[in-house]
Amino acid sequence: MTSSAFDRNLLFGILALQMDFITRDGLIDGMQAWTLAKTQSLGEVLVDREFMPQSQRDVLEQLVAAHIAQHGGDAQQSLIRTVFRGDHTGIAAKHFRSGRAGQSGADPRRCGPGSWHAFSGGISYGL
Image 1 (cartoon, rainbow, N blue to C red):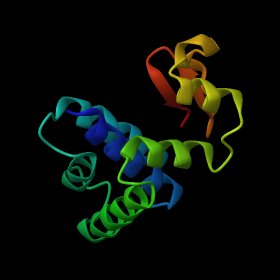
Image 2 (cartoon, rainbow, N blue to C red):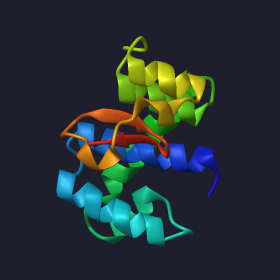
Image 3 (cartoon, helix red, strand yellow):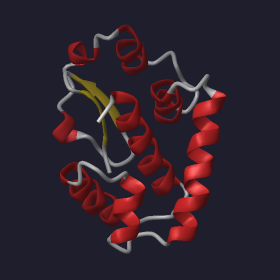
């Protein structure tokens, strides 16, 4: 899976959770299954597992496409804008943009609910 496709799927999951299209537990379960389903998108996995109806997936896919287009077709930038919600001055944002995410020292296993942390593997969202 390309990093762009990975970022797009993460954006899909974040927006689904923020819009109450899916529960926290449903997203966690779906993301675990998605990591094993190499040929399916996160949206497909969530629909197949009945965590989300097809109609919501269709709406969310359009929203994700529009959000990515708004950021110059760059899924990673779209994801960053969603993650940091317009506050691009924070330490984690600076580290993420500069490619120094691993220098923040945050442990992704200790993310609190709704918090983002930069770490050596990228970013982590506490659900």
